Length: 282
Image 1 (cartoon, rainbow, N blue to C red):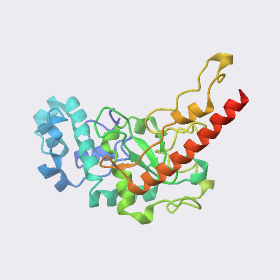
Image 2 (image 1 turned 135 degrees about the vertical axis):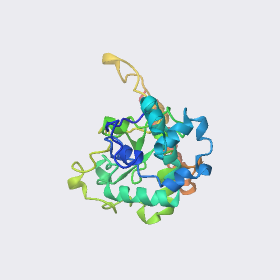
Image 3 (image 1 turned 180 degrees about the vertical axis):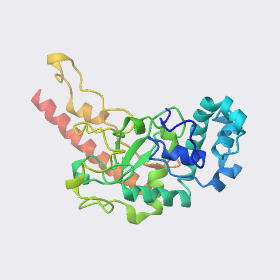
Image 4 (image 1 turned 90 degrees about the vertical axis):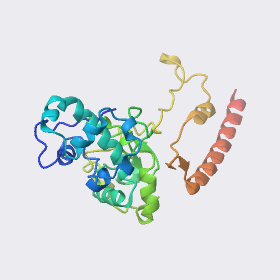
């Protein structure tokens, strides 16, 4: 996946990073401190992910020779965006990076949850994979703990690896006062009366009849045409429903895991009841 930026190729204003952040479609990104980028320890392993790594890094830090820049501008811009995105994913899980993203979160820069009962809860960007070119960015709601696709196609084309799988959960771990309440108005934004006016840069796709899990859509209930739904077990459909599992550096959160185990046990009991009712009906 590649993010789409529409800024002028010949206008980098004061710096490449400023040009990149001001380009349409890059509103989800925050500015990475230059000293973080220049510390090669923070970039360990990225040379294996990015072609023309050294030149792309020079372009990001405005140290690239003008002649080389003119010759390879097109390809280097693509590689520089990839490199900056991967650096960005590492930056936003640092203390300073989290602080910058908290400011954007409080402003609702990432959009608000389309679910009515979440009352315009602010969303956070998240990747489903830490490897680039696999999955596009999604938006995580800390209130309903579900994922949504960005409303804008520009944002929907951003690679999820530029934010990673850890970021929103680490943010709530570091800033526990920002954890959204499960009932009542959200801590950070307007009430539901203004839910449709804010967050133009992100929100769910509006498919409230079918929740997305951030991995795959729930399979359609079998059958085609007039026979759709006939002979399909409600219990079997319920068992196929996937749910998003928050993780930090690949490890599932303890309290969330405990809650999900209880929820799944409750679901299993309900499925057993459905199966029993279906057997009686047949």
